[in-house]
Length: 399
Image (cartoon, rainbow, N blue to C red; front, side):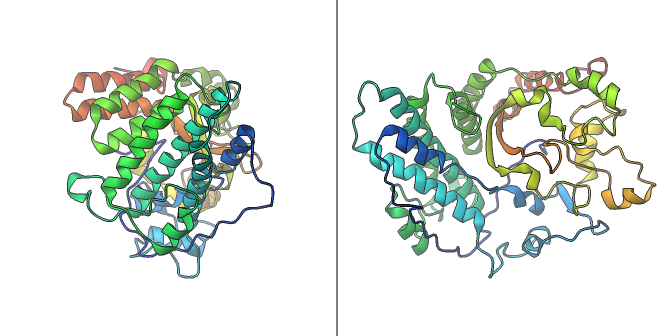
């Protein structure tokens, strides 16, 4: 089943070798206090996208060769399904970004391993350490899924990814390409998630750009689903669903009626500017208004099959359609260039918005899938209906 608002794809061994990672301090100032190390950790959260190109290797999108803009050269290997996605003259930014984040997380964890905080420092100490564990788990989750085979009993002894657990080891491990097994990497991800849970228990994120207890629970649900630990995935997803509510997209209808289908989400007002933003638990990975899926003149479009999941029967019945549709007249000249879609999730290029890393609706989808895997179809349908009743026009929804 294709996921419209969120998709992660497993690409086994898409690069045979990876660029060296050389991390150096940016200045001579050394962190001392817990607050200093909090600043170090904040510098480690990913600032660039490290997942965007993966959709090009799936059947969710296609390259529209009739558009008005060519794709960058480094994107071509992805959508032609080349044997390697890494051009020889281009650095692997995904590998580099994720190990850079791990370096920052390890720097904090190395220091905190030998420190006993004062009573005044204890709460911040635990928060920063918990975030460091969560960030490291998050990065290894992406690394092992991007650069190794899928999690499965028959694959656990296969090569995974380098797994430095201290800042000193990052350069050595990544340069020498010393890979731990897939099983060991996943074991470390789970260990880090559990350590993060102890530290972040009862602590919500200071901002949507940092991990807190609820966003951590959603990350755990995602990891456990991938591992086939369905009871654990259900428990973690349930924790998220009990904490935050879904946004009822019917609340947008008055605004849509006022602006009209074509202009409801245009200019500097996008889907993320509605009450939908309250579903976001964690923004990640740089400015989304620089992404390659602004479809107006870029060549990459969602497939009609994917779009039809939001069109259903009748215009606008599923409000998620407004994320993808331009509602343009395809008989006009610009229709050929634009194709059937624009992208209104993050508004337009003039407004800085950021990629969504974790959001409430994923908990519903994760728990529904876990119930299906366990054979509990009734519970799965209930979860999906709870999601859809907040996505489909009220007078059109049929449970």
